[in-house]
Length: 355
Image 1 (cartoon, rainbow, N blue to C red):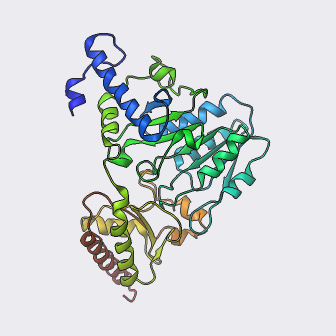
Image 2: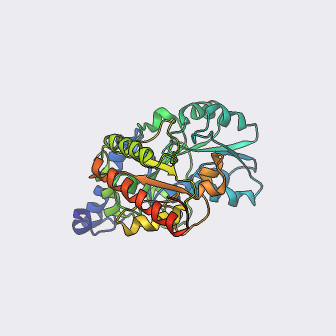
Image 3: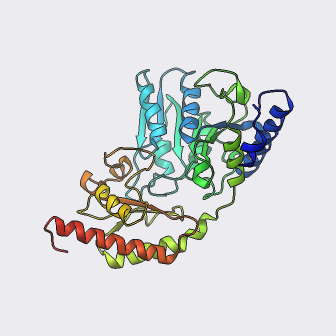
């Protein structure tokens, strides 16, 4: 709010109002760079993770001969969709499938890389299951073989230790709202020496890498949100919720339970239930949960992540994803379990099934 009310100038303007706005942007850039372990000049502010991923992919593939791109089968659509577009230009995408816990192995990804590989794209944390992926080992291989690599760290920011220079990758995408910051602002971290291609050429802002007047209040809010939420503190609440859920509904299946995952996410299946229908029941009860990815607005297709993990469509459609955040308590978890049981029993009764 302070940035919006006191820095109304265009940060590209040379007058005093513009300089005040520029100071806010530059300070935020320094703060973000220090937080993720990169040089300030590597930070390109964007509208969010989707744009950041698209810039990185276009930057590499638009300037090289057709070949192979290696990614995982559980990537966010912001990675999968632009790669599908490049298939029309002769690029082949090799998708590495995860195990039943939703984790790929570094060996699998490395084995998919060949002499024709032009780029590797890999998420740090899956946005549906919370499962953490072995990006470090793959990054080391890519660096030693001169293969550009994009790390989608949108779900990892604030939850997994990040140090861009130590990871030694070429691009890393981030989004502010995943750490409690404003929606509609993010960043792409670009390794020194890598070119970032503008998706929408214009005034040459962000050192010619992302044109358009910078979102000064959003950028300030992004910096202000850094490190403000201790996501690890949600683990006891999440674990208590899952324990009580398994007691109340023994047939529930917690996805990625055996994998290393972020502390705020719980993805589970309720066999025989439709996740979308159950979601609406929970919404009426005052709970905001998701079925699949909240980023896929309006979609009713089964989760591509769960299908890649080996589930059939029926089971994939029975999924519910719960994200715990500031203010959530053990009692909230208990209340959600009770609401799930009540909604499930109501739906089963309506269908004439035994409760």
